[in-house]
Length: 383
Ligand code: SF4
Ligand code: SF4
Ligand code: SF4
Image (cartoon, rainbow, N blue to C red; front, side, top):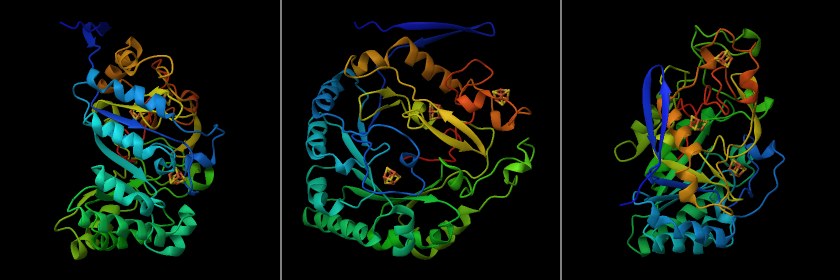
């Protein structure tokens, strides 16, 4: 019988036992942090990180570990970069499929035409493509790419699905809602219908620069102590749900699914990464808990600048995923996030005078802190 480590913690008189089980279910792999696009809201515009590709050898070693995780079923190619740029992406998919993993890919879709047929033949489950506008002009202004080229790729995908009589990969359209493109949102269900998309995912923008801070559509509760000087108005948010549902009712909603973001900071907090038993592997082999903590960067949460530092449990060049996932530090971190033992800085009387959140730590001694994570609020959503 395999023995697993157990870690103990005393909280307010109660004893909590955390088990180091191999219960990983979903793996996000960032095969590169390079990208062919230049989106106005991308974190890559503001960081000073080296760029590169995950080596095929490291990926193969990772996939060799799949049998150690009996519940691991999904592999998502995504992260902060364009996976279709990796010269060995198809070999990686083949390798993962041989171990029985189901595959999802997040892509800007600009190079989709070239590999559409391979994705169908390899049995990729889902492809999520970014589409933040239904007009060529604003698509180019936001992403630096071409809507026409994306459409060409989607048509190639649909032709290949027809040829091989496959419903996979299912197509998902992802829209990052901002002030500059919210008027385009009503056109998305029409596009989804025309392109045969299976789902729409709408997310808010994470501002990584002062410019994009002015693009947010979400807000915070009226009781919050956020100073008016930040130009944000409590309770004043754009009703994305009405825009999307009204358009979907005319075009699409009989068969598509729609996932919308939350628009107001609230009490409920739920980490979709930790609670879905996910881990993220970055292009340079670091094992991190989620996208927000996968790199070091600056960002703005309700007008306050934050410096986020990458939070890694170790590198696959030195340790196995199994040893990192079951390590005391990672097991304790997941336990803390599941119970969400973090204060809520956005609701705090000292918000904007306290320095802890600026360094992404908090007054309860957490470093890093999830105290004002917009992902745990579902304000920002990932596939
Ligand atoms: S496609 Fe993604 S990674 Fe590439 S520039 Fe746009 S947001 Fe950044
Ligand atoms: S770290 Fe603590 S004191 Fe500071 S803003 Fe957050 S909740 Fe308030
Ligand atoms: S709450 Fe946010 S920062 Fe914390 S682990 Fe989850 S996604 Fe990452």
